[in-house]
Figure (tube, rainbow over the protein chains, first blue to last red):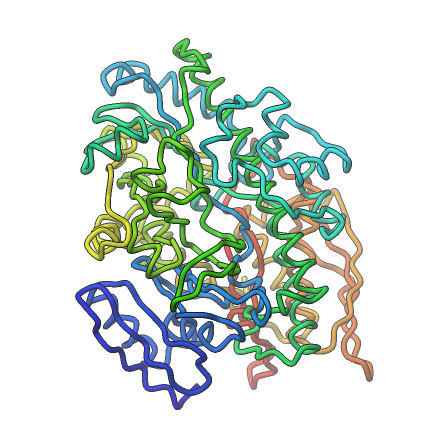
Length: 487
Length: 141
């Protein structure tokens, strides 16, 4: 790796090319501002043993990758792939990469809208927060109220959101507004280990910990009224965001297949540039098995967020008498997936395996996969902020279709390690500060609260500003938290 | 306590030192669970036997920590003591046997920390230094 020069070519203010050198099969493309670009180069040149630019270059060197190895505005080092990384592979010659999905398969965000305005919840904030805290299982060792057998788990892994709807969590109408309508085809539970399934017996309908959260937010500002109208969003409206993933099942699939794909990499003579960048040919028994297991993880996350949506509705009914049917799903979209999708590139129109690691699908206007109501304006991206900072709704565009295989940012990206965050912020202080800003907090872990302190993240406003100004994913609305429930 | 937290980008890095290889594995296990609860307060009510074999020490450490994490989650328990740790070297690699002792996770009793998604290979190393054994690893939280 020492011969790498880490030179970038500036294409425009928010686009940088990593020229094709060495073993790279395609160039790299970074959609970041100048400061971020410089930071990435400095880190790599400074010899940081874990840096995102080297990871972009490593991904560009994998067989069957097309067009470019992509880094988005929230790029930071991940495991094998950078987080905020996108790569698409040809079906015949390409590879499936476990590191391109990660350990939290189909981690994502569900956004729901309510008929309430900020004023209407202001006086009930404590009551609502208490109900959410009591109803939503969160934090280390927490268990959901659905206790499953192995047969039922298998069912959840193929049915996704429908599994939870059938058990009374939410409504059929939710599914239209979930990516893949809440169920991805080609999920085969036989390829998921018994251990992974057993770990999930009591985890459907649990939030987890770390950066996962449930927030009651207000729509603070609308930037694009037409798109906001299509999404059913207006200023001062109260909405609900749920950020979590496939829980222990996804973690165990990630762990199990790291080993299997390492063996496959050796068997098929594929490059292993990092231990977590192992892969298998898409069209091989190992590739098929990984993808079908990973899809089980995708469906598990759909089932989980659907169950949590039901619990959130129940909490609002219990605390302020809001009818569950009056809470409607705006959209749900994941940011750790690998999926077959048809894309145009270099004059071709092909089905590709698109890996999005810490990147949200950003389909532009007209794509068949979008809900009918969103086809004209493009699909929503739900970008999570952190406690006390804003979240955003962006939308996909023609440019995201042309440049990034219909992909955009997913969050703020950490700027401070969790160790530093813990020593700098005390959980209780963080809570006090948030309370001062009018944000009610309920947490199962004060140390965890400190780790997730807003100051530990890059400025989400700046990341969104880059994503917006680059023209890839224009900003539709800004959401500000009113209440936060964390594990 | 012979482990410390490292600055490691987005997630948590740990460095563990010990005079013996067995002690190192035991301390690495305690370091892992220190992220989840206050390990000094863990009772030794439950026990778990582990037996692993891997081709090299890095893989053995990775497997040890991953297995502890996975079993902890499966059983809803945390472990604070590792006894009867034996590591044997054979032609084909290394073998490990150990007994983990701990108790059920109880939010009423334990001050809960972070759930760990996975142990990673990022920066994972294990070395026999002049000052004894040392290992480093990063977890995804």
